[in-house]
Length: 391
Image (cartoon, rainbow, N blue to C red; front, side, top):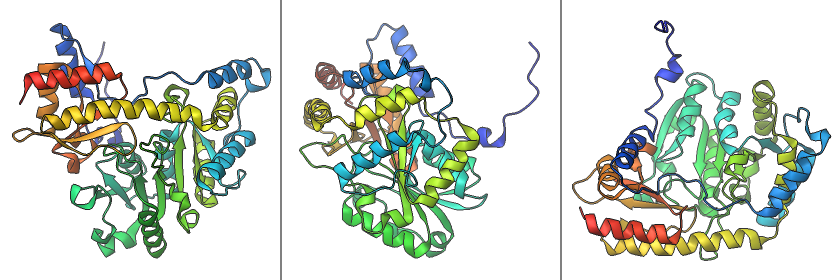
């Protein structure tokens, strides 16, 4: 075959290396050596989607009215179910017609929202370590990412006072994430109020990623950014059914908040996608109307797993806090290791796949991330393997 003569576009050529490429290569080599792999690297729920949601899809998929193009912004009935869920869960009132838009998973909305508001050269404030889509989406829109380091000294929250005045004045947008991936830290309502004041002062759109808000422990419910006074004036919140109801493959989520931002995102979607299959939206309505016993059951399982992994890691002298939410454990690497070298050590010597912290941004160096999206037995086995190999 002749050599392909055309280069990738600059926006592709300048992408950072794929986070899991090197890990996948090390994992493949370990499997070739006959090693049994325990994968604690990917945040993908291992539990099945609740049966009422599946049955709702079965029924809806048989309805011919759902076989045509859906609306771009989503069925009003789904958006109403979102608004009702926000009222029950957070006490937040939303207009489903103008303040809610359906997404093909929250990742899609996060990836597209800069296209609606960020011009080439505009600054976007990005938490780091953080979800890699924030800086990539910024780059695709021609924006410039300004990193807000999440450090242990500041409780792994952005230090708004450390953002230079000239950067704040030029910034167009800010991404936030609570409960946080990868650190699992939860922001308080008081912190969100500071964000609202900061955004109002500097005329910044806040985009809060709340994908993990329903995975929490010890009964301590995380707040929604929308609960902060004035939040709906300055920004939007992205949510997903993926983690809450084990629906990662279904690709359905939503954004809520300031109607002009929702409208801008809707304009992008109108020109890029054709909406979510309506049968999946019907299943989403069923999910949002389930009582808390379903999500409480999932939280109980994750908490039991957390309480196997965390004490085991601490007993080995590793530095970490027990996560209050999400299903990630953020672990300081032992002396003498980097994030990458400790990740390699665990794969090669113990067959345990983790994620290096620097893959989420430079401030993540010195940490690795583990997930609890596997069984208690596997987590206990991972701890035993780590004890045997030492470091």
